[in-house]
Length: 288
Image (cartoon, rainbow, N blue to C red; front, top):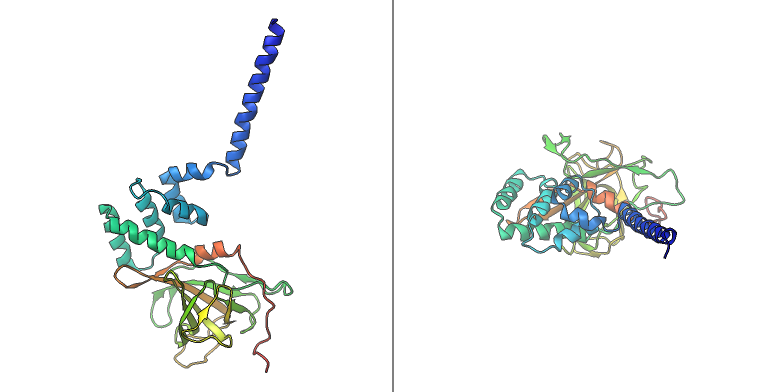
């Protein structure tokens, strides 16, 4: 075999090796193998958990890790600690985390599973035939509210571009049972639905309820439950006009002591925004 042929073989081998390396890098750049690397890097995972930039399947992957793997409890706690609104609950979880107590990991896992398992649809569906019917929302978690005393905002306000009460339908983001309905001075006409994993989804300031919705009734994810409005901020039932038309959406889970804890729904809504139903917006009030 002459030198020229040997040189060509070596050159072809190098080109093939380079192609393989480039293919692997391109695959990693497009997500192939990137998830495994991310989950092995606990520091980066925690940072992304704080920003809620991990997709839902990555949280599930973290939860499936072996309980004795270093960092699992901390990663779950980071998610919970940056979402919870109850200061006493945060301190309790921080103390448990410092002790690496097994019950902390179990409680954290159950709460994360509950918060991520049942929600399916964005609570305000789209209307393909009504381009003007837009919505907007921002992370107003714990922003100051003053009606009924100074307090933190325990939810996300989904604002209506069309300022007409009853124009936008509101659907249940999950399956579950209607636990509460009726008037609240702060929330106006509201519905509270308990999901199978124990999350209490709270829909407030409604203009009215869909026919057939009542306390104790079972609803399915995507089912119409009411209409967006501007009710509330008054002891007088039926009061409207104290703020723009919008839907206040909140979510609550009971902690291990049975106390109700509010969690920030903004990041969950960002996930659900990719899964909107399309509805033909009904006339309001209903005819007949």
